Length: 296
Ligand SMILES: *[C@@H]1O[C@H](CO)[C@@H](O)[C@H](O)[C@H]1NC(C)=O
Ligand SMILES: *[C@@H]1O[C@H](CO)[C@@H](O)[C@H](O)[C@H]1NC(C)=O
Ligand SMILES: *[C@@H]1O[C@H](CO)[C@@H](O)[C@H](O)[C@H]1NC(C)=O
Ligand SMILES: *[C@@H]1O[C@H](CO)[C@@H](O)[C@H](O)[C@H]1NC(C)=O
Ligand SMILES: *[C@@H]1O[C@H](CO)[C@@H](O)[C@H](O)[C@H]1NC(C)=O
Ligand SMILES: *[C@@H]1O[C@H](CO)[C@@H](O)[C@H](O)[C@H]1NC(C)=O
Ligand SMILES: *[C@@H]1O[C@H](CO)[C@@H](O)[C@H](O)[C@H]1NC(C)=O
Ligand SMILES: *[C@@H]1O[C@H](CO)[C@@H](O)[C@H](O)[C@H]1NC(C)=O
Image 1 (cartoon, rainbow, N blue to C red):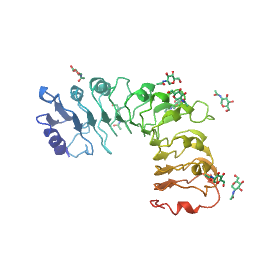
Image 2: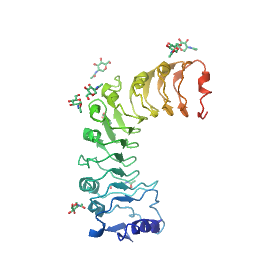
Image 3: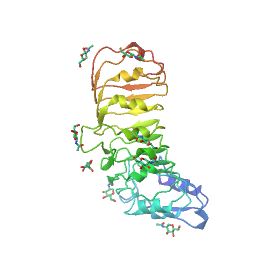
């Protein structure tokens, strides 16, 4: 696996990389500072020849200031940043369009100094913590924000001004510390509905509540996961729209009541429907069995 890292780097015409006993070392010279894309994803940064300290992401990555895409995704082993190096990276890589750091041990707050070109920010399972600063949502080109699996990251729905996040199409906030308010009787705040372009929304494993029918407003939704929350109300809104784009609907482990409506139409792209652990009653309507791509 170490060899793989070296080979990938060698393809970038002369970027120097060698493995030293504390991990991967990058040497960056003038010849590489035009590098636009650096992709270490789908590696396994573990290995028997490597000391436990292996996996420190070299600070020199911050010198590649013209990078457009940086991807370090590692499962299950966690490469990590030394303190402050994540902040330096964001500060120096001012041209960055895509940053994917899934399962990297960042262990810091998210600083607010970002490339304004960012379209994709992926920081799932990175041990980031603190209160998510609203500025992250206001990156004017941001299309996909993935923060799932960071239970120490507090996201405050109520105070966020979602009207400035109109470009957002994919939002993954499953398993963060999301709260609608300090008062667990309030619903998802209305401004969230200003995410008019949202196609993928994952709010699973939070403590959110409110009427499920409010999600009716997301007309372009392809994938909606609300698993393990406390949403209530009935599913009848499913019959009031043609949910032609909807592929996945996961409302399991909530407090939904009443029957599954029998007069639903236009959901021909639905392939996954999860409704377990609610208080639904009645019979399973026939339209569910006639969906062309459903997996039952
Ligand atoms: C950030 O970039 C500047 C040049 O633009 C460089 O001098 C500095 O060393 C870089 N910082 C880090 C931590 O790489
Ligand atoms: C993650 O990084 C932090 C700080 O660098 C360290 O204290 C912690 O032990 C690391 N966690 C794991 C699982 O490696
Ligand atoms: C989660 O958020 C609440 C307030 O919304 C806060 O009191 C609590 O400390 C947070 N938990 C963690 C683990 O950050
Ligand atoms: C978003 O709404 C807030 C008030 O809720 C307002 O101050 C701000 O100007 C709005 N931003 C945009 C881009 O409309
Ligand atoms: C909490 O919710 C209750 C009932 O909806 C309401 O009467 C109360 O004013 C709320 N408190 C706060 C601090 O929002
Ligand atoms: C949506 O955003 C607009 C401004 O862009 C604002 O006037 C409106 O109040 C917002 N709607 C909600 C429900 O927050
Ligand atoms: C579906 O049936 C329910 C009651 O059974 C009714 O309230 C609703 O208007 C119907 N929806 C449509 C789109 O016909
Ligand atoms: C479903 O439960 C409601 C009360 O929550 C009840 O009024 C209704 O009759 C039940 N329907 C069926 C088919 O059991």
